Length: 377
Image 1: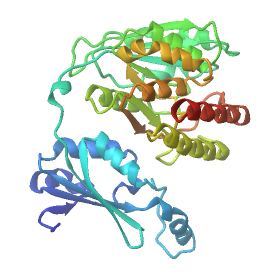
Image 2 (image 1 turned 120 degrees about the horizontal axis):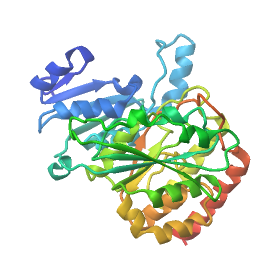
Image 3 (image 1 turned 120 degrees about the vertical axis):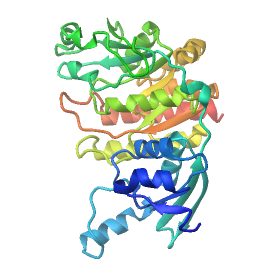
Image 4 (image 1 turned 180 degrees about the horizontal axis):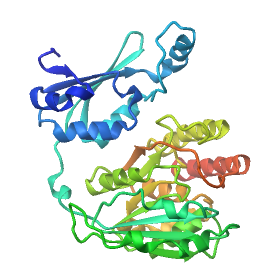
């Protein structure tokens, strides 16, 4: 690779680089980006059909050593780093419609270099819009209800938001009913001037998030089904990424992953974080598909797949108190292409988590055993 092909890319010369070079070098550029996927997507949208991209970044296995070196003054101090591993970067490039050509390691594995090229876009799906149903399970989320939807962008043909409440000890149900629907007046979109948003609200008869999601999916009428937790610990803007994965044909089942980017300080307790990483490795091995985060509440799938495979989904729900695994197991059983979408996980601003680390940890062990029996034996 010669310098006349590749050019280092900085924010200030972004547009100029797109127009004048067939190749671009991102030298340790992605380490501190807020949203690497959006950065890659912007790069892809302005790249030429033959553009190649070279991404160099630090190997995440060196994080403890480099962090210690910074604290001891042996290395320049830096801010919070992303510390993406090789598969994280390759996945983010794939989501942004780049095709990975090669990946190599340099300097005893300290630096990883990934080269990718622009992938041919799927023209047919780019011009078609799909309707979207966003299911919002809400238990003890009174203070979050009015803030859930304003931050979710307009995308798709139309959107409906399905709030499902049950067994709250606060006034969540009243907050849903008293919600100011005026913000959902018919709005316009640059892609669709007739874009509309509607709201539905239901009270579940059963208990737990799994039951709430099942009810929401059964009441949904959109082409694409999404789950978005009312605690707002995932940015609402990220839902558009889930939509693009399905609408572009990149995947049939989109699973959020909170274990890629650094989290806010109190977003997840340390034991929970360690447990999530361990179970992610176990499920990835058992299912034969990478799941860095099985319990991220944000997921998306086609309603036609839900209707077609509902019998299996309901069968898995009998042993799955979370609901996440019923969807994941159904997707794996029916050979859906699973795509993980990295999201930033934020600290709650209202209420407290409904997760009990020890009781739910034991349930995770049970689900791991059931997965092993189902997919390995």
